[in-house]
Image 1: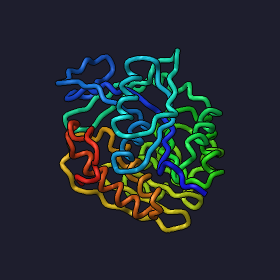
Image 2: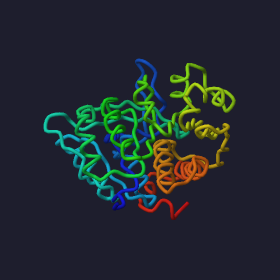
Image 3: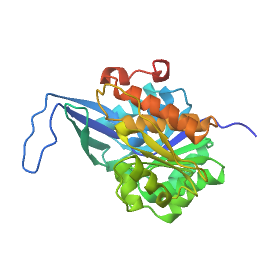
Image 4: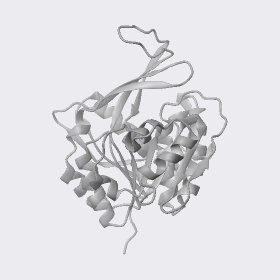
Length: 303
């Protein structure tokens, strides 16, 4: 049997982000004043594919953009990161996905997304593109595309014996059909609280939420930002992984850096603990970088 051409295939969203810097998150009816703005290629799917490729993984992207300037920028960004985008479709009617993110002076942020062409990805087409790419040891999914798409491609990946990572962000109710196919579930404290039904605000409460997230049937990772993360490998005891002390420039994209790093190490056959320790270190390194350094290739060589 021939080995697959890719280590990781990401099926997910592509957005062009409008970044507004230095502004407090506005309250209702308030106009906040920022210090600068910039455009950045994003979408959880696109970010995670780019991050894994920059770490050295052979990465392919499955997604959809509009026939517009935003779409062109998103495709160029994938090319520059050496992500195979042969299965990124160009929608002739729907516009590309986009978001507006507001970063305050502390580096924290809030965002609004407009999904656009991402919602037009066809479930049957996603399965066919997986087959056309030849599969990969790891499939990465998120919640910024329709659940029917995730279900379809996850079924194809499971049939080929791949490891399926679901970053259940943004938070939404997930069907049991999708969750049954997931090998590693990654959530932050908000998503963990929504899925478990219990408050999640620190390490202890995250530990308590693990059983409700199906830790006996799948790997579960709950990220807690500056407080570290808790993990539970399938059938194993919960573990806490401590945070790294870092001077934060911006937390924007940190979760996607974590997922891309995690997927890389899982594709190499590492355990959940090994992969999470590496991903935790890379995400900490990432939040301390200025935006100008984040776009450069070979992030791994700098860490």
